[in-house]
Length: 76
Image (cartoon, rainbow, N blue to C red):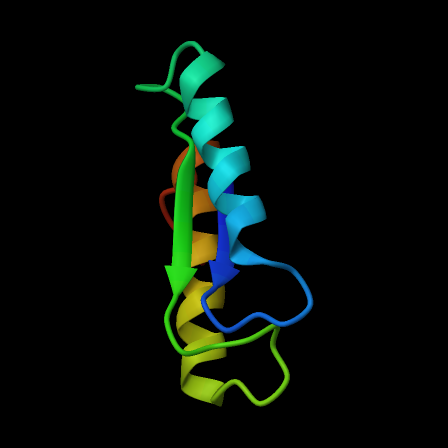
């Protein structure tokens, strides 16, 4: 499971993602096979005004995580 948040998010407090990640890490079995991760962007918000390069990097991180967890080796 991958949670994403940003330090400057004015719509959803980043503490929610942090607390949820911590709680799942505490109770979830088999984390070596199915990790629980948190990705937190600095100096970013809920998407509006976020530079395109940052949005692309975040999207690449999410897609990479999904491919890894689903066992996809090549997208093409």
